[in-house]
Length: 196
Length: 104
Image (cartoon, rainbow over all chains, first blue to last red; front, top):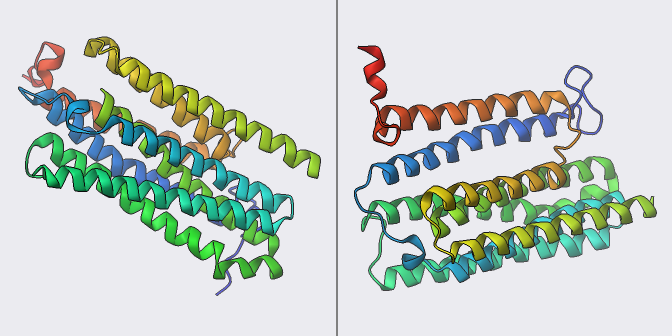
């Protein structure tokens, strides 16, 4: 089945269908993470004691991960800009770096998790750790999904560039909008869970 | 064409720089151990500023069509509604009075 309006805007929405689709999906994602952020605010405001978060978690590792994820957002947008400039080689370089950024993020996250487990700190240990593992776990799942999509677009998916370059460029933009959203979620998770 | 993309790349790198500076500021402020009443609004404001930069420039929200803005605006409204109504009904000690009293 042919998906309509992948390169030209639909007259009534003024958008290509994939772009409208990704934004509606992200709207639902805002509510998913929003419900968890609301739970965090509720549980923390109602708690009689709350740990000094920066004593329980590693701020340097999380700050490193913030920089890694922001950098991978930049390489993602540069991958799209490279296609706009008709350079598929540069696109593959930047998309590769974006995937590498996601992988580094997950490695650092794994180190953080293992350190917590080695100190017998589990989701059931406290409300704070329950929220920490739920929020960062769901976020890491989003990173993994983004890496799978980006991996496809870096590898086998790139053949579309030869037949339908404009449609492929739009695909990268849409995949990028998702990847940047994952970055935005982390931009809030970092101060809320580690710093405040 | 090449020229246009060069300009774009410069803009994206400028946003990258701004995001790194804001990250350093937010980490730096956290070491001051400010009281929550000051530290939380500052930390969240910096996070909102960073998210706005990513959304406007990387996600191309700046100058985007109304058909994107309307659903997003509605989502923000619903999210704030969820957040505030939950706190008002369950964490009413924060506001000094019971929200439910208004219905008696």
